[in-house]
Structures are given as C-alpha cells and as structure tokens.
Image (cartoon, rainbow over the protein chains, first blue to last red):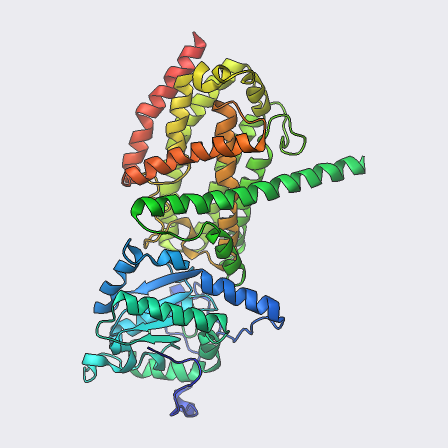
Length: 221
Length: 304
C-alpha cells in the first residue's frame, strides 16, 4: 500500500503549445449549455486551524463511496458492505452518484474506454474528493502491463490518494487502505482535487493521448 | 407586543432545535437497529450529525438553475412548516407549537409540499434518473395519501374538528379515549398508509438508496444535500408526532412523546426489515386495495 500525496510524477514537463487545450467544444451543438464547462480551480481549505481540522475530521468520518467496478477488483468490494466486514461502522457508505460521493474507488484495470468514464465521473464529483486505486493494475498495469488497450498508471490520468496493491487485494487490505486514507484526510494531505485543478493541463494531455474519441465537455461537468 | 412576538419566535426556535436533535438521533438509532438485524454493527448513532458536518464542509457546489436551488429549500420549508403546526406536547407553552382551526388541512398540504418542490428542482437538474425518481415518488405518495386522507376525514367527522390540537384534546382522559380504540378502522388505514409515507422498505423504491437511480436527489450534493438530509430530521419526526397526535392520544410530556413516537417509527422499521421491496406499480395497487378499503369503511361507519 502506498500513497501518492507527497510526490508527483517526476517526468512532468511543460505542456507543448500544440497540446494545450483548444477550448473548442466537441459536444453536439444541442448539448451546449447543458454542462458546466468551467475549468476547475484549486480551493484552499480554511485558514483557521480549528475549522480546517473540524472539516477534515468530518470528511474522514463520513465517506460516501463511488465504487467503480472496472475490473475483477470490484468483486472484493461487495463483502465490505456485508455483515462480515461492515464498513458502515467506519462511517463509510456506498452512494450511487458521483455528485454525492467523496471517495472514488477504481476497482482494478482500466481500459482505454473505461478511463473516459472514470475521468467523466471524477470530474462530476465535488471537492474535496479522494481516489483509491484498487489492485496492482492501477499501480503499474499489473498482469495487463503489456496490454494494448489498458492504462498502466492510474495517477497519470486522475490524482490517486491511496493505492491498495495486490492481485486481488482482500477486503482486509481495502479496510487498511481506508484507514490510511482517513489518516491522510485528517492530516490534510489528501488534496487530490486541488492537485488535479493545479496540474489540469498535464492531466488533460495524458487523457487526450489515449482517449481518441473525445466527445465530452472540454473542462468539467 | 414586540416582546410577545420575540417570545413566540424563541419558543419556536427552541422547539425546532429539540426536534432536529431528536430526529437526527432517531434516524441514527433506526439505522443501528436495521444494521443489528442484518448482523452488522452499523454506524454510530451520531453518524447523521457527522454526515451533515461533512456535507457542509464540501468546498465546491454547482447549480443547475434557480429551481434546482429552490428544491431543497422547499423541502426544508415543508418539513419545518409541517412540524410547527403539530402539537408535540399537549398543553405545553413551547412544545404546543402553533395551532388554529383547520390546521389539519394545512398539515396534509405540507406533507405533499416538499415533494412537489423537489419535483421541480429535480426536473431542472436534467438528470433522467431524477425524473424517474420523482415520477415514482409522486405516484406512490399519491397512492399512500389516499388511505391517510380517508382516515383523516373519518377523524374529522368523529371529533367534529379539523384542528390537530382539538383532536388531541378529545383523546385525553384515558387510554380508551385514543383513536386507536374509538376508531380502529381509521387507525389501521392510516398506519398502513404510514408505511408508504415513511419511505422505508417495502416502499422505498423511489428513494432506492445506494443504487444507480437514487431518485430525486441524483444530482444534489454539498449544501443542497445538507438541506435535504437535515429536512429528514424534521419531516420524519413531524410525521411521527402527527400520527401520535391523531391516533395515539398525543403526549403530555417529552418522555411520553419519545416512547410513543419511537414505537410508531419502530412499526415501519419492523415491517421494513421483514419485507423486501415492492415495485411502484405493486405498491400503488397495494395501497388502493386493503388500506383504501379500510379508510372507506372508517368514513362510512362515521356517516352512519
């Protein structure tokens, strides 16, 4: 289990001019105006320490999960909600929509088609939002390391707060991952949403390199 | 004069504070009970407070328009309005809340008011699941309102009043004066309608928590969701108190109110954990059969 809160990928370079976002919309003209097209902006936490600590405490103790069953890892998430593991005792609840959710769990490998939906769902979530990469496939591609249509590192496309490595990680590992995530939230280190907003061009460039049919709003949802 | 107004406002605020905390704790306790039935530990009873704090501490929120914003406001208005018209403790100066002749009609309107506001707000969010959820919710609520309305009509005829306080006053003086014993048919119809009004299993399809079509709140988040979650505390406890007032003799003290409303809520929880979910067309048919017939029989008996 590793976390990616401190270090950013070192090979990040300035975005070439030709790869910068054009601002042109790829949407159907009939859908113009239906989506929020604003670029995400970093939102700083409160400057007052007691307020900031209270918000972090509330965020850590009430986590709404958006479980994204991209791959085989999703099967390990179901037992978490049953009597055997019962993560509701930690204040974690499954929620069906990205708008309500605060924690995005990517349940395994993400194909090129799937990463489009992952980006779309991630951008619909409201800050502060956290991402957990489940399984080795999200860390380095895992057993799909040489696959032609599977991404290798999830954090090149969306910021990941906690990785739970394994193939497959058992529910106990996931619970350990949740505990680590809670520590990071309490410490104010889980600022993935702000990282995404700050390095927006870099993330978009990576996304555009693999998503060829970009029929989504340019910036946000 | 100003002093009187200020005192009335202070009493209303104190009453609202009490019921907000009671409602939140009640929701927490019920979630705990359901979890224990499932063989789980469940979240702590104060989890609803943490959820509210977390929703308020979200840093971003988007809006889909004016009605989208007003939806949760209408919902909260409906919940608070409903609560403030129902006497919580009979004869209490601050928990008696407001009352006037005919307030029962306004109470019944407020039960539906929030849902209509939500329908407008959810429609503006543009999400297809919101529209489906609203359609399902309104269908089921309309069906469950029918037996409830029939039983209220039976009560109005029986007690010759449309004031909730008047109905509570008429039931004082002993357990056998409760509507439960004086008009068991109306009570049965209303308690069956109550299952639908509480939105718990088997009548929770339109809410469908934790599933993809979550219903009207699909697009709601951050402080919007805060308002809707906070409203649950008012709305749930106001409905419980209303049923206690109409059918179980009201309450003359806070402990009595707590025991009675807890048992009424437990009825819906008990049914909820025992029975699986109905589809909406099934639940609509269910309400229009036995509960509606019981309501009609209660009205006819009063007419005789």
